[in-house]
Length: 311
Image (cartoon, rainbow, N blue to C red):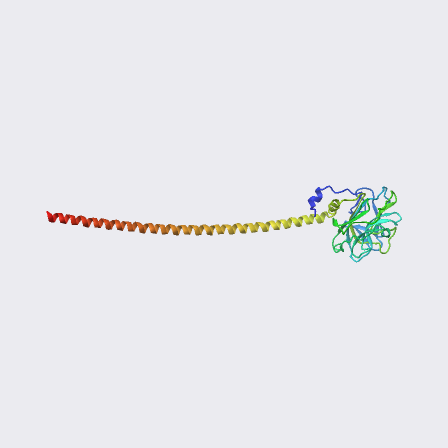
């Protein structure tokens, strides 16, 4: 996973349109501004969708679109809902479309929704378990050769597939909608119940690396929190390491002191024994010398007596 610093430093791919939902429905990159329908509203940085009739839609887009990438950061009200669209590219009459759809064909799974499933197959991804508790990043890439690839939180979602050629959306004849799978008005089974934090449209197919990169840019607060948590964990780990090192140093010091003390004690005992041995040896030597001197004295006296007698 990319760190906050890596995300900030990298060359994030530039979208054709970006909707931040930061107090409004404006496209922060251009002029594809959306309008709220049937009570949809922006609140606390999210587009709020009631799952009944609320959605948002842009006006006609004046460019051709075939190859593309769509992505959204979605927080669902519940995981049991079926068939709602997060972001859809559709013809103005709502008949033909490509969309990020939740659980239309398979419960709790994301899919690339399309008109009569013309470009839809199962990704075979895992069931969603987190989108009710935190926003998840869902991205679908439509490559020019017809390959459609899904991603969840920057990682491949199941397997890519190639079912049919991509649809060409001609200039002035298509739009982007949020919260409605497709159509020109709210309809049962097509509405998303939840919140969209951010959405983007690209007029090209992003690479896997680019998807991984862009998946991190919506969660500034989350990234900062994660960075802070990581820093705290690192600090805690360093503190633990420092404490361990201090303990090792202390134990080593105590061991060295003990070893030195034992060495000194042994040396002192050895010296004392040496001194004692030396003293004993000196005493014995002195005694022997005294004894020898006494013998010499006795002999000299005997000679003197003998000489006196002779005289």
